[in-house]
Amino acid sequence: MKIAVSGCAGVGKSTLAGALAAALGVPLIPEQYDPLFDQPGKFMRSVGSVLVPDFQSILSNKRSQEIRYGDFVTDRCPIDLFHLWMMRGLGRLEDKTADFHDACRDYVQDYDLVVIPPWNGIEFRQIDHSHDLRYRTTNKWIQLHNHASITGYACLWISFARLELLPMPLRSIDERVAHVLRRLGVETE
Image (cartoon, rainbow, N blue to C red; front, top):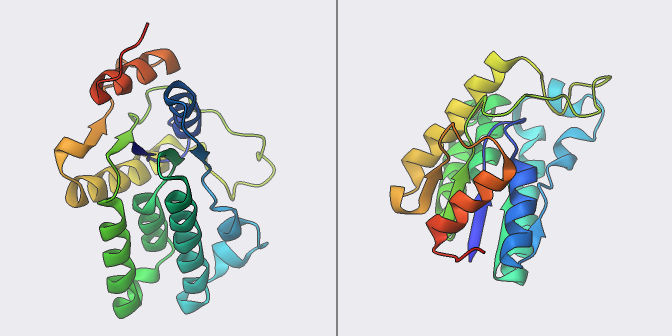
């Protein structure tokens, strides 16, 4: 089973991905976007092709790890990465964007299920990066914009048979995991 959990910061992706991996007994593949954020100032100030190799490397590295495991749950996927590409203004590089779009869109076809938790379904918490908002903003309206973009790409790229938009009433991690396991046809105790 190849499962991706996607969506904006703060919707509970990492928590859900970890809980699903544990419930299914498969490896959890972490986000791996740190190279985009761990270069002081580069990500936020850079425009143009200086970021393209970083995005391509992340996509390639994630793909290699997923191929190595076979069955897995992954925290974030190419949908999130393409959204980030567009948010950084790389869409101005039309040929490179077309290639990266196609690579991301084709890549997500390999997932058995892409799960997107609802926006504003849990209380948004700033991770302990409050001194440095490179990782996420607590502005829920910016996050709504990000989540709508990611959800839109998912709806454009993936058949609804392989896409699970979690309903809002599912707030607890246990409810979310149980819902996804039912969707997968996995029996729970």
